[in-house]
Image 1: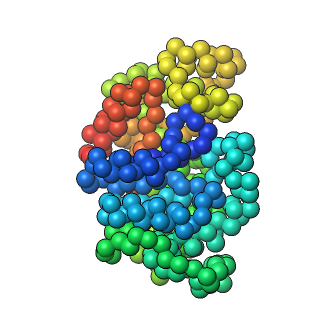
Image 2: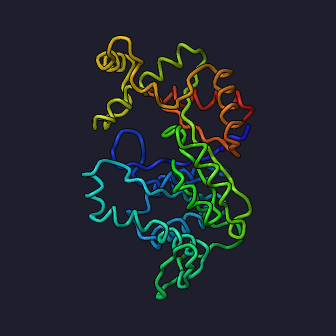
Image 3: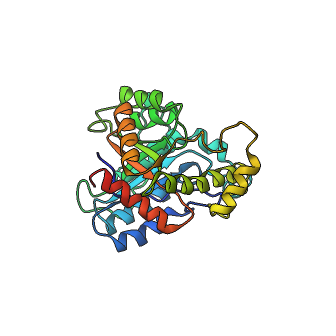
Length: 310
């Protein structure tokens, strides 16, 4: 089973789990590793100018040749207050995402995005320049990806022949339709072939009971995050039990259980991951494993890799 050995720090501006500046983290991770691919999951393009993003990731690619992936998304990444603090025209920039992505791809390729492609709706000005630094060889520059959970994001990736990472752990409902749209609309004149990464949330432990205990903390954090109270991160076991017990009406399912999270011992997790890969024909799986204790997270990843033959 193909599971990516990679460092793709996620980005969010709402606190709690992720990193708000993955480009900084990538430099540190790259300096401490030699082989794994490094990428952002994802740069929220409506908050940035394409030229600046291209320069940042071309610099990373010059430091770590052939290892840099640039994941791009249009999500606000946080509540309205933070979105407004980052940009007072987020919605306008989100609508311009296809144009900005077109410019970004060309800057990454060392091209000047001065020409227009009406078929793709590109409206890029002729006064353009090339991003620096230049990478030394073919295949060593940043590889652009689109990350998303909709047909719209899938179609953008297809139009520019990039890889597509679908966030299954965020949205199960659109997966089949989005991945089909990506494969069906893929422009082979721009990319060699469609390539799908399915991002899945999984909690693995030595026993089913231990995995369930860890997962309860994740579900409690999701409950807090939905209420705008997720800044403190994933609660410990006692606090998780209290939070979930208080919010669970009699006879109802546990809050957060509706999310697509695989929970279990190694063989159970491996079986479910295999099912998902076959169902969606994913080229790779990207595992997101949360937990209150860092040791539990490390153990979860190690068990999954061992069970999947990594």
